Length: 121
Image 1: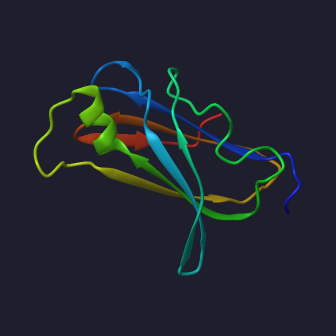
Image 2: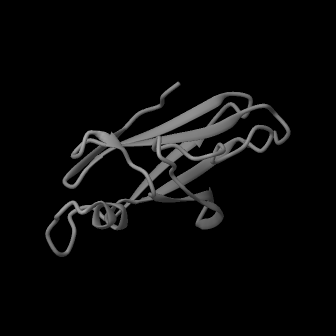
């Protein structure tokens, strides 16, 4: 239900360079059946986090969401050489919010040829 205190955050770490991934664009989508609706676009700060939760407190709703990390553009801007076409460019992570009162943390650990994620705290 909307109006709960649940929220969603993210954090991106650049494993290839050993630092937070500053300046990465991330899009947040709400998924409902075949419909994919863009809710907002954010950019990571110097700590690899967004300045505010990607879904702020009080706006979390039960359902399916997708974060799309613009890894290719970030790696280009960071000067990390990759092949062409890039092995990783846009990285979608689709996840479910079962409890709209909970905090969901969806981090991304990135290198030019691999990534991992998990439900963080």
